[in-house]
Image 1 (tube, rainbow, N blue to C red):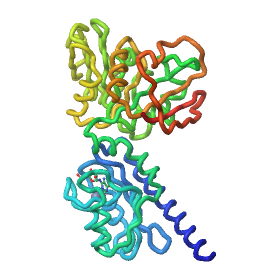
Image 2 (image 1 turned 135 degrees about the vertical axis):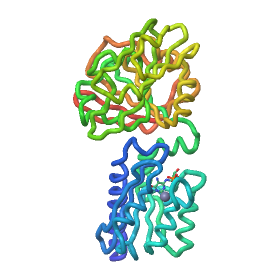
Image 3 (image 1 turned 120 degrees about the horizontal axis):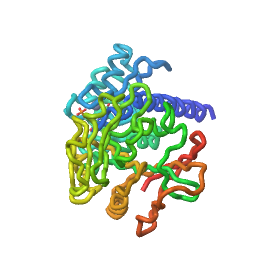
Image 4 (image 1 turned 45 degrees about the vertical axis):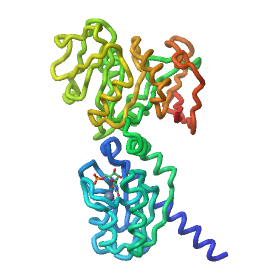
Length: 361
Ligand code: AOF
Ligand code: ZN
């Protein structure tokens, strides 16, 4: 009986510290691609003696920051890491060596690193050095944290999330819920998670609808604007100085988006027909690993894009905001779908006056 109690306490400690790792990792939300978000805490005698997270590709890994923070106290301590410590020389040296050198006694890992050059070799290396390793604490949470990294490292393709707002009768709406854009609102939070957002040029028309995350210090996604309208005058609001360098217009050859119609500094690209596959290929070449396809402001740009996306299975996730409205919207998404698509792991939550649904394809 006593032993069981002790084990329960130990397990909940592991969960507690792993959740702390995930919290730390999220400090770099939207900033780490193509790398994962990783958090690490070093615990000794029931106290956190060091903590750290991976801030950006090219910078040291979470374990290195946590070990630096802990100093000599890491010896005989337990390191909690949300991702298996790496065991290779990439942009930075192996974390396994750093943990061994610091003489930690135990390592608790959230999930195995799916990167084929790591894939359990980190765990083995630590075990061979006499360190006790536990794998899989809060594994689902750690996988959810790094869904983009997992997809990208295994497929080499950008992770694509389809987002739209809809009325209670299922029609796509051009507007967002009232609080969505505000700091802490779901759209503002969602934007900072992605390397790029694809929208229709009509969604840029008003300053208030420009896709900028209002979270403090947020990553601002690259904006890819699809334009079908002839002679589009593409202007971006002057309040965002950085926006021009992070904006590209993709048009059809005959849409006539002439350079003189476009504000200086904005890149343009044209295809015979707007194609999601080609747009994603372009994102890949530009090193953009995660893309939010936002159906806001549709002006005919999304019909082919949606058909192609469903047919070629290009979507990984769907985020739907249900607004308390009946009628007034555009076509239903199902118009562009020739089959029934199952959505897995559907969750819902209230977001201001709207309801937010999330699921995976
Ligand atoms: C860890 N801790 O904090 C991260 C890991 O080029 P590098 O050196 O940054 O290596 C990138 C790879 O290392 C990345 O693809 C993933 O497998 C792992 N990331 N590992 O132990 C971390 N960010
Ligand atoms: Zn590492």
